[in-house]
Length: 374
Image (cartoon, rainbow, N blue to C red; front, side):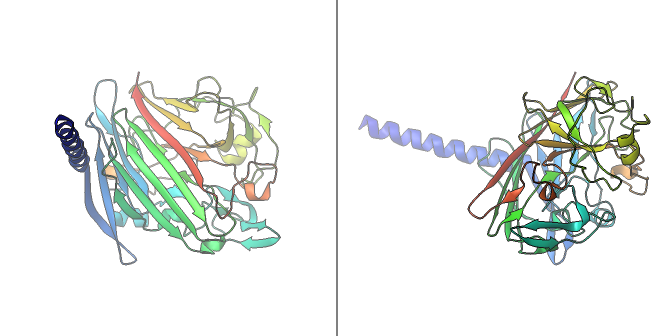
């Protein structure tokens, strides 16, 4: 009899804790209508962790649109690019904070061959296809689900990319789960499957400024990027196939350097990219792959990933035309991107790590943005 009573009490406790956790998560996630796109509702999700820090997500492009974290004095500031309204988002740069696919980064000439079949993609970056094409995953409305059983506030976005969307073969089911932890970590867990052999390279395209988005440039940010080599590019920013060691070049961030320290050097790769816009080959030896520190605020961003590459982009083409949160102008080099993923143009470089996804296989990858102060 006592055993039955004990089991009943344990069952009640489990149910109570489960309901309590679900209730807490509901309180930590606010969902509101943000707009409408192609007859689908677009939502804005506000996630608050136990520290009271906030991120905002939208299912339009599965974007991160706000990251509010404190400086060393406790002053909170948004440190990523985004827009105050959906109308501004639609008219602005749709890459800000987006999940990028079906193929993040560039594909040369908008063409690749798979099993003897050549596929042609729309061009949207000079002679190349960039970030999955003009109507890639950054510009579609994803399905949403608030994950009630997660220990931290979490939202799952899913999208079914049809066969031959933007020229890519296969129907791909894509999923990203964003979790906002009490350690101020944005955990991004990606899952993709396909019904035909295809290529997939997925990333997040957030811009960061640890002063606060729109508050000056990022040239004083100190960067450590644990990569011993990078992939040099040609005049249209396509990898040449060379794997170049960073030692002795302005691309060496294996120890801390300010981003602006050597960005103006007369080094051919910096001239071609008008700054840093290059894929680094990660060493993947330590937990943290990238650390960015802004000494005035004391804010630090660490990036942890299982991916082989990291695209460092220093906002070389920002021109002030985009007006972000609070009416702030987003000017030249006021933001930097750290895009984990595979190398650019990998489908045309068989010696690069493969981005092929075959039927029956599942692509699973994870990247973390961790914010702290020192």
